[in-house]
Amino acid sequence: MTNEQVGAGGQDGAAERREQDAWQGRAAIVARRIVQDFRPRRVLHLGCGGGLLVSELRALGVEAYGRDASAEAVAAAGEEVRPFLSVAPESAPLGERHDLIVCAGVAERLPEDEAAALVASLCQHGGDVIFASTDEDYAEPAHQNVQPLAYWQELFAQNGFYPLLRDAPDYVVPRALCFRKVTRRLKVAVFSKERAEWAVVRLRLLDPLRELERQGRLELTFVSAFDQGFDVEALLEADLFVVQREFADRRVGAEVLEAARVLGKPVVFEIDDLLTNLPRHNPLWSYCTKITPDLLEAAARADFVTASTQPLVEELDAQVPGVQEKAHVCRNVVNTRIWGAGFKE
Image (cartoon, rainbow, N blue to C red; front, side, top):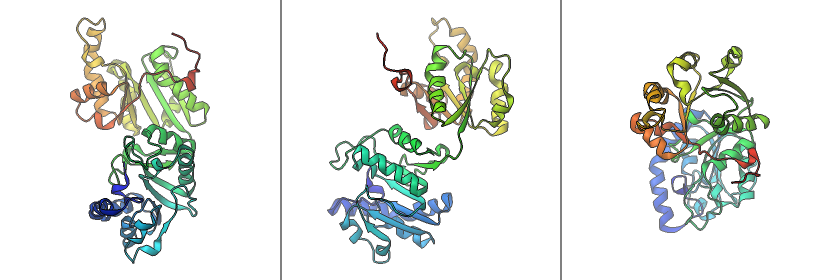
């Protein structure tokens, strides 16, 4: 992600002019969507370049301001918007509070400590934060801290902000997310055909979620197919249902999945093996063949799908078109921050 779609602050010459021209055709559309989706009264655009988005937002009645590290970019802004723009380093304090802060193509320009401070300041001064940062543009000399999305999500989580995954504002820039403060702990209900002490459910779900629970970031309820009963009230209060693998077998989890639909609970379908296309010589072939329609239906109807590898996501998408758009890859790895570092081969 670069600033080419949000003002190209800090760049100069012909390249900047081309990027400004490309953005100018979209700024009005983006401004209208922001007003429609967020209804903000006051907006700050970090990395605003020539202030095109600020100008369009102000035309819609929003009290919008912009800030950029490039004095040249701000000086090139139109006379009508220039009084609402300022020049300051990316790491400078943000000052007043805003209903919405747009920050795209900025954070990767800062060293790690300053990037963390920027995220903390965004959370302190913004009601909502539209954020994007490149995870691949290492060649740009100005990029000091190119990181995967999970890195930035963790920084926001440390400040109590979490992404709104259902309504990502990718009309601003591709892969942009909106982060919003969560004022209470997320309640997560996990359903599995395994016992709590079994390896896969612990590795992929229970221990990571328990670590977040220890940090006070969520409340976990676990239901195994082996349980004789469970806390119905806790499930009714859950914000999110996670259904692991074979629990989607209609003979096991049909009532839970139907309850999630009736109650309007978002559902995550978790799978780490291609159980829907096992080779015939596999000992579980017969069983998995019988439940494959149920697994594919769960993948199709779930709000999100988590899988262990990208090839697994692609295989599922070939069977259920659309899975890839809502899938997230969570690799099978031992997280030493959770289990410690004393493992030996």
